[in-house]
Structure formats: C-alpha cells, structure tokens
Length: 125
Image (cartoon, rainbow, N blue to C red; front, side, top):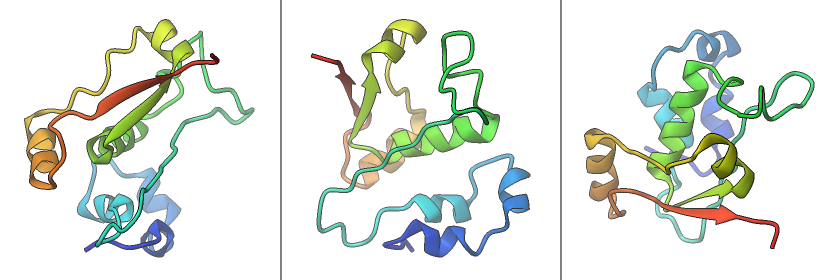
C-alpha cells in the first residue's frame, strides 16, 4: 500500500520509534512509497545537515549521517529513476553512483525500472 502524502504515514509514527530504528521496516518503506497509480512525475529531495546547517563535515557529507540516514538514502536511490548529485559532491567524495544490491535490483526490476538508477551530475554551468 502506498500513499499520496508520506506525512499521512509518518505522522502516525513517533519520533522515538524513528530514532530507535535500526533497519528499513515495511512501515518506513510505505512512508516513502510512490502513490499508486503514479500519474505524474514525482520529485524527492533528501539531505542531511548538522544542527547549525552545515551540509559537510571535513569536506564530505558522509560524516553527518547516521546508519538510519544511510539506509533512507539507499531506499530513495532504490526508488529513484534518476539520482541527482552535485558536482562538488562527486569531486569531494569520489562519488561512484548508486550501487543497489541484488534484492534492491530485483525490486526495481519488478517495478519496471532499470536495475540501477541513472546518475545526473548537476554543475554550475
């Protein structure tokens, strides 16, 4: 089951339940699921920041996120047709694109998507 508004599902969860999560649960997958049927393009944006608004730590974003943040990013990459990445991130982190595991590739294929999402690098020019 998916919903048109992820907040419909997320609002029923407590912050503590999300904070203590150690894996991607069906409830979290449901919160991020696309509406069915998907009748128009769907854009998602997700990033992690520090409490003071910084988007990097020691020049990369990896140090800011928790294990759960990384799992959510993996889920969003699994659902995406295209992953947008800033050129600075590609350079600073030697970004190699999305690397879905076998189970993620199987779920993507079952949804009619390519096994691996396309990566589009966003530049200032």
